[in-house]
Image (cartoon, rainbow, N blue to C red; front, top):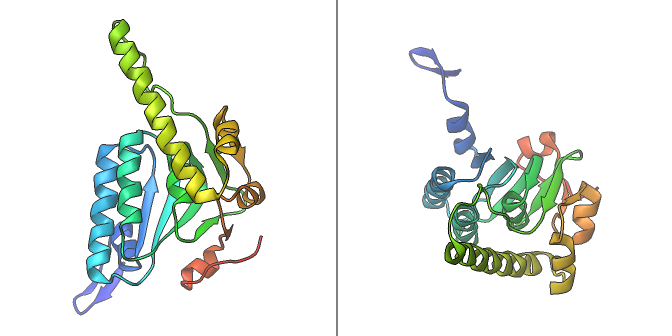
Length: 197
């Protein structure tokens, strides 16, 4: 509830968070969510191109193309986009988390990276299958290159890490170069970040 001249009125949580320059990425990453996130980043950049934006992530991942749209928007944002892992950031969500200018995880959160997978049961002929495999290979190269850039790890290290579902605790994520520090709700509410593990 928000108090005004005419009494109290309900205010959506999303609106209050936007007022505080916070965006929630919750659930499956798809085209609709990607467009929503990009629109919010655009609005906040128009409001103030210098104040940090907090992107709070809780996601199993989703579509690579949609995730890359969000990634491109984050990288081209004039306002720094900090990322906070609230519970989990798996697959494409882990890549987005790692792209933050300051990357924070709550102590019991988890990250997970792996190779791109086919999201639905494949139906088609041999030529269609070849096209799918080519696209998967291209997506894999793109994501590997991004993770190399964000973590400072070598190509062989990223390939090995992504060869199966690789889960990271807070400490492991910091050591691997995916995360910078622990998140604290109290510090975030004050507009600050936590710098120790």
